[in-house]
Image (tube, rainbow, N blue to C red):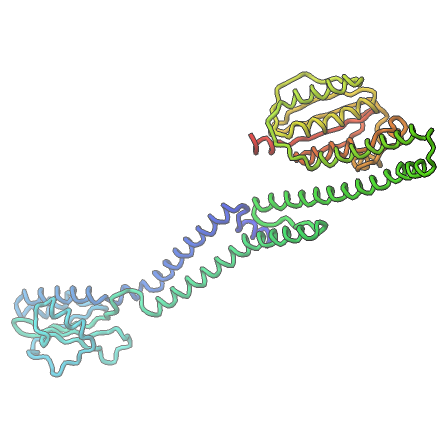
Length: 447
């Protein structure tokens, strides 16, 4: 059943709108075909009044054009099952009062023949099963009368019953189309709107199921990804605030004790604690700025940006090599991207002995940046933790006491804000490979 629905219901908005239009046309054609097939026999059997008047007038004029003795034989030439023609040679006067059942038809026929209405009689056929059966009698010039029995209906082909059936069918068809449109298009949009409202209240609400047209499915996937990023952002902020509160507690306690004891020889230590607190706050502000930076996006040469990063790290004493330069335009926040790549390359040069940077452009316009080092690597259990704010491995704590563990957190936040990903992969026989993917969607959207 689901496969049949997928086949019947197009995937995209344009396909669904086209399907609705085509279905409406098909339904109208089916309705016309049904009415034609059902009513065609009756239409062929029952004459319209104007056609009946024309046909009767033609027979009358033809009979009047032949001699009276030949009229009976000539009338048989026009005799049909649905148009019975008889010549009555002995009738000279029509009965009075006339037994007319259709004054309009009688008036039309008299006007067509240019006769007095007394020379024309229209009545219902006696004992006829068809309500449309009419008996027409016309006095002929030269003697005799013409009698015609034929079914004569309304001016319009479709009667009241057919009109009511048509209206009911169209109403049901439109209601069906409306329900189908609501079910296939409006229902997923309504679920999407409710999910957006729910996330505004509870960012940890369950993700929205991917259903509906293709364009809406893309929007839902982007919405779910945005919700994950919001959750990660709130988690990082919570961890950051908790870490700042914890880490500031120790130097503040030492400062309080030294101020209360009023020992002059502790001034240098007090200044060291203040400097550590300043470094901590600067790192925290840098982390926040990396996430909330309002820097505008610009098209930059990603190759030149990486070369600048490598030069900055080399000037600080790190051993960095970069692959062959190539022009690679990319739309990003230049300063934020420079900060992210600098943090990653600096970590590779500091903890991995040396860093080798490479840039590769993908067929769809995206880019892959890889930073490889020859260090001891990171255990699998800590690969995800090193991106958390203020988390540092044991080796990092031992080699750099002033580090705050925010470099990779800042880098990840900036790369995620550009729609990319960053992964840590092991190298053989040892070392680490930082794999950064930057999608082409941002380039296409802002160039």
